[in-house]
Length: 140
Image 1: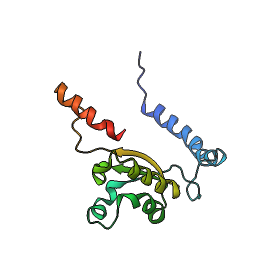
Image 2: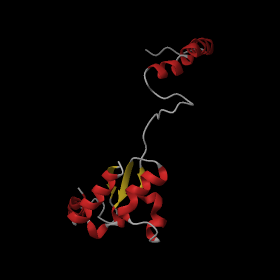
Image 3: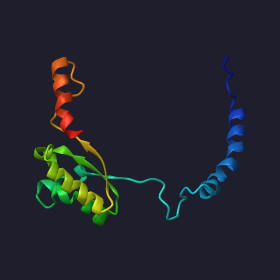
């Protein structure tokens, strides 16, 4: 059975929580988590290659240089690739090896590859869906 909360009960409960909320910042400092104004990061972020799609399409940046640019220009240590920027290299082990070495040389982690143009994984047609899945195998 649900008991309705009165306005008075709600305000009393909320008022009791204010001192507890004041303890959050010191607790975060004790646990090693960053607090506002500290130099510690709360979380790490990555750079999605699509963020630089205009630069890549203009030829001002090459896919192989994306990890280095991510580290040197943006100070980030992880990347998310987009397959359209190296679609013809999906099975080129020399190219992919070079990309990995370049990322490793800059301390950059390659997190994922966003795949476009490989079919709809949610296609209601079984044959089309199966083909889309098979098209993605080369990116795994």
